[in-house]
Length: 71
Ligand SMILES: [Zn+2]
Image (cartoon, rainbow, N blue to C red; front, side, top):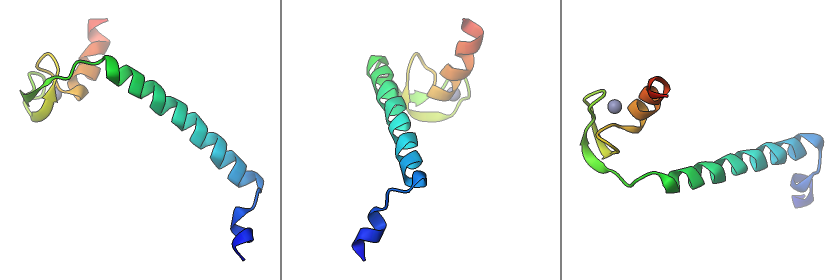
């Protein structure tokens, strides 16, 4: 009965493909994250909320938001 779960139908194969693509994105994100400074805890200068990790006084959300205007 266990063999039935290890079927190789096309849906399983496409799931595996999607997972491998996501995995690539995760690896890319991890490489990018490694380049980002560690940051400090405090209040965000952008939204005023407290975050455990700020970089240049901004939370990740605000840095993403402001980056569009800075560039
Ligand atoms: Zn913020």
